[in-house]
Image (cartoon, rainbow, N blue to C red; front, side, top):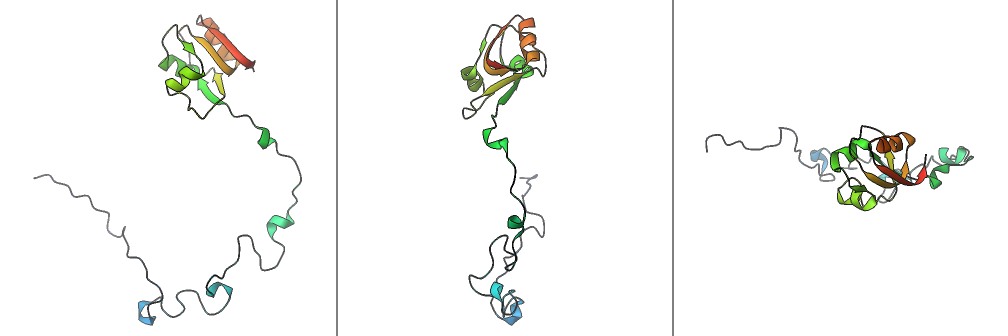
Amino acid sequence: MENMFILRAPQGANKKKTIIGRGRSSGTGGTSGRGNKGQKSRSGGGVRLGFEGGQTPLFRRLPSRGFSNAYFKVDYTVINLSDLERVYSSGETVDYNTLVAKGLVKKSETLVKLLATGSLTKKLTVSVDKVSEAAKSAVEKAGGTVTAVQNS
């Protein structure tokens, strides 16, 4: 047992919890750090988030005009050619099920888009939701075929 190292937290990392309301000599007695009187000194007292003492709060003073398209945004899981080159062997089929099986796509992610980052030398049959034009030409150049629901 010569080279035994004992794991310890550095000095000052673990501090004792401050106990309040235990007499004046404790340093946090008396009003227990709440000050004298007022709404915040009372039990259950305090104001909600954004409250400005009766003044019209900032979030109500600002206009709420405009339209956001964020509700209709379609999220694609991005797969690159370099990922296909790394995981697949020549002659295999790339589709949603094989992507999930090989760990490139999580089961909760539903839409997949193939992008042309990296290079591809293997002949693959690709069937995904969306394919970029550069990725499509790279797969076809390697001797594979591409099937996509929508191209862009």
